[in-house]
View 1 (cartoon, rainbow, N blue to C red):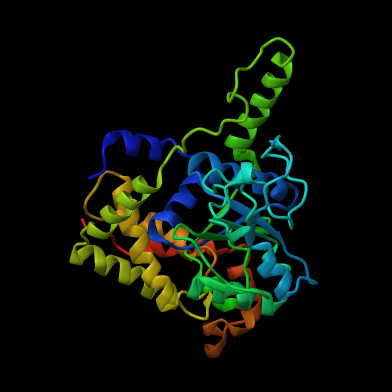
View 2 (view 1 turned 180 degrees about the vertical axis):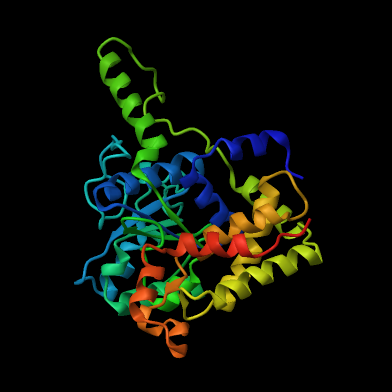
Length: 367
């Protein structure tokens, strides 16, 4: 079991931070969405989560219908070309200027200068730890397939080299969606993504709001307070370290699942497959991710076993982006004479979240 200090830090995380932590523990990837008017704030919040909470480097790939494979591959890479001048710049992390340029070294606290040259003159590049693929659903299908290949093989080919993903690597499509379950990418990539999270702007952006307050305080005292050497721009230690993430991963793998809980999990999968609003069934990959997430949640709740409540919680996160809703004219009761108008009325306003809730209400949980 994890120590109380670590779990106290975990329980204080925001929903976005928790989603990224679950991906890091399982070494998987997630889909994040929000309404269109809040997507830029969401991108900035995720940047701050990567650097402040986990101490990871990041890049943002702004995808459009004209994005090419070369554009996509180049945007994944962070490079460090030290300046020849004696001073260093310290740009603000929460106000990026361009989503297609490599980020400055101050935005990647775990990326030191290349040791190949004493003066730092050598150029080194690698894939960032966290890749935020903004509007990936708008990119051509070839680009989305290239993203899937990156996730499967953990490497990508550029014009001059083969780049390998780091040990801690999370790929996050950040999409626009009015509600949960609407955001999707191409089918195979969509199924490969571990969990989905829809962020309501009314819930706020914890790190971004805190950074804005700190910026305002700094601006108001800058003319009065004289900072000592090294105090300005110091990043500090991440809230949760790589070793702590690895420890949580070990605990999740050791979590026990009783046969009754496994039966409950498989009943949920079966009921989802047979639900009248679901088209296309439920994939084996989703079931595998379902089992992973149950164990991860047990480790985060100070448990060494999985409870039925954790199974239900995992179902919401696993199937939000995977459930494909059937068309009224293809609903199975139409084969036995149902009227399409009646089926349309039945399926109206039913989304993936409603389907999961309906199934959890029908399947009896073990005592």
